Length: 229
Image (cartoon, rainbow, N blue to C red; front, side, top):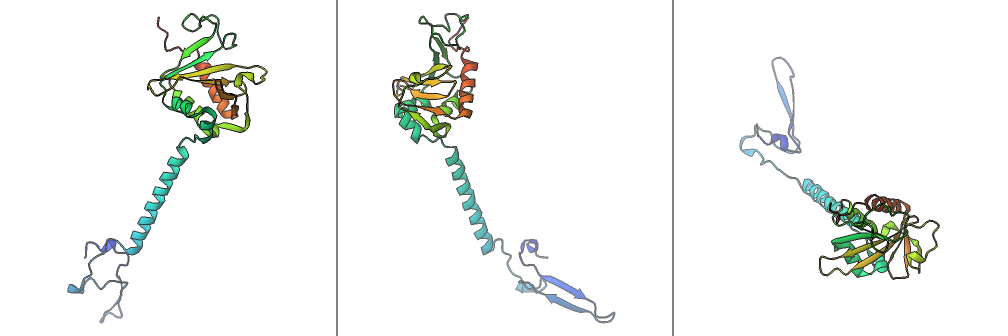
């Protein structure tokens, strides 16, 4: 039998019945190919049909569209955050290697028992978070525009916004690379206000993002990468 017979989409179907004990009658019902015993009239087997090729192309196109859509969904949306922070600050958030957070003097988050490696001369606490695990997620939290409630935007600096029990912290970014400008972003953790230092414009992050940012900062504020015994 033809070795490709099982790959044919329309295979020859034979029905053999015995009309009697003395005489046999063979009925052959052909479904697109001649009988396998037809000698030189055997058909060359087809590996692909036209419909098979069409379906394969449709599946390929679908896979390409879904892949592109998935990449587009994961891509960080920066249009509104670029307007809030400015392009230099966005670049610093994306590529600035040096990353510090500073709590101002008198902050309830400062542990006065900490030594000189944490507490500065002015009473503030500065912590080096460069290369800290999870820092990439923190950068993304500040960059992604969907993490903000843009209906709350106001023309005030973060420190000027009335808050019942404020927890202020400043994010400081710098190079390398050399193209990164020194950048300071002000945060208020209890209500989730964010704004570029020195700019009268602030906006709240969403509650879920506020909780994540607060947890990240408060659990890492005492892990100073500059500290050596």
